[in-house]
Image 1 (cartoon, one colour):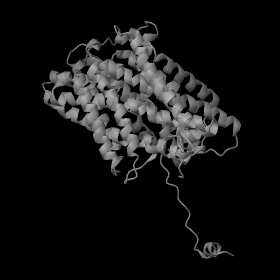
Image 2 (image 1 turned 60 degrees about the vertical axis):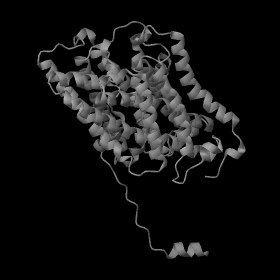
Image 3 (image 1 turned 60 degrees about the horizontal axis):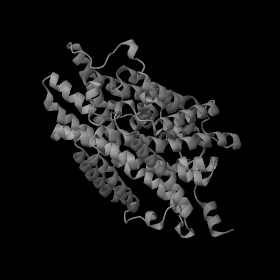
Image 4 (image 1 turned 180 degrees about the vertical axis):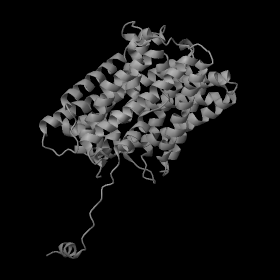
Length: 475
């Protein structure tokens, strides 16, 4: 018998590992905190009462399929979307999926920080909200400050997300709705019609539905919460309950503030980046309390910056780990700093983000830039979801006996609905919105196609084709 075997034979029995279960209500609240935000509210407030329809439809055809399908995948295969797609399709497709999860942040941060810039303007000078130069400066300063913080491996940053839900979402959202109701109760007429005939968006061809694409991005990220399905006592029964509860809460947080904004700010005056602050400023003015506007602005900014920090290192970390195992990225991008952080990836991403931020300075309409970046972000992310739905069907077919803690009902149908909805949203994103008439369709298509297809497909293809054996490092 070897020394190792003797040690194992004489070692005292190890205590059984206990599983820390969570309730389905807790999972629903965790999901709500990671999905819900006030940032997209101005985008849907443009539609007034029809925003209800434009939120509910994507929730049914995208949010639910994504949640249930990713729960099955997470309960059977660890490692996230890379392992799911690699097992179901191939390793190159797995790399494409994890790349898209990372690449969407390149355009996500400029749009998120564009919201921060417009919100911060109401703390300093509201006229700055429409300034592209101001927006570009704030984006660059905030992003590089975030890189500096993340590169030092600062612990406890993740705690900012939970606080951000309360400080920057629930409290301002509830206050906005309450003040909006009081605003109407004082006899003010709603800026948007609130009659049954306006429950559906006005049809003006495909361009009238383009803003629905933004809601797919609003609901994205459900696959990251699916990992918690194994922490439920009865996943088959409790996970659907948690998802339906989360969907209801998310819809309330999205719809009610959007409606409140539409009551207060006319659609033709609404800024897609500063709409939340426009509504607060107007309603506080009606109640002679405009001194509260900067306070709400600081709360929203703090929550958004906290969210940025919690996201900044996550997707790039996943890309780094896969690349070190398979050699998908050049050695320069695989290096870690002394704190064990992928600083070179963050800096390279920051250089691209800086170039993108300059678009705010040179394109006069800040709302149009914000919208274009949101569309590109959504389309890049949707490529990952298309791969995930196909992989889930193939895994159910090719590995039916693989242990799964949860099996999604009617998986093939769910994947079919989710795939069709994702593909439709991706294609609709190439149609200029009816809200932004007058611009060049060719320029719009060039920017969106170049950003979404170039960043989402061409760049990872080049990395894969140009890879060398020396790029692969032992993990």
